[in-house]
Length: 272
Ligand code: ADP
Image (cartoon, rainbow, N blue to C red; front, side):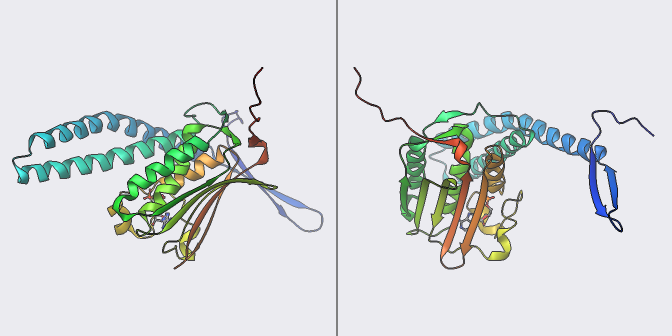
């Protein structure tokens, strides 16, 4: 038997065994834990290595496209190359972000900030993404509510929810981004009046690469990692995600944060 060093991981379960007696089961999960760390490191390394060649590939196809204006057939092929390399770049970026979140390696410090300008910027970006589809994008946010967290991570979570609402609902749908506090905590929610999601999918949406409709998701440019990223960002901020949806009526994705992470901005009084 090997000594119990500090690296060793044990999973314990206590089971009732007769009258006032218990059976303690201990399972050594060290090997599983080591495999998990190897898996994460592998994904992080591969993503990191792929990023540079993909960025070059994308850049080159972009400039080639400009030079091929008078050769439409060739320009079309280069356009396909650019689109596919862009897709791969998005996927690699999401994989890298997810593995950073999983390993607890922060993308930056957690400080107090007012997220209102961030929400304004994201709703503007969502309108650009919607383009001629013309979703009605509404921002209903408390401009004085400060949050303690990492701005880049909050941006990433909120962008995923908001851009999903644009991607997976038809034009004309109303999408509302809300930021409110009540007695239970703060809520950041994205609600849409789109087609909704059948209830049997809801529990699996935050799994990596889980898609409701694979064909449609790919054609909308999704990586299948968006909601997994949201879930990890929330876990790093003691928050959690609630998903409600009704087919034919729409969906609501709510991020709940504890009150300890919220404060009201000090009114800026007259300076003397
Ligand atoms: P992706 O990065 O591919 O968009 P996500 O993890 O963000 O993947 O989302 C998982 C799936 O959830 C998507 O493939 C899509 O089918 C579904 N989905 C997400 N948001 C919505 C929404 N607002 N309305 C309908 N379906 C949605």
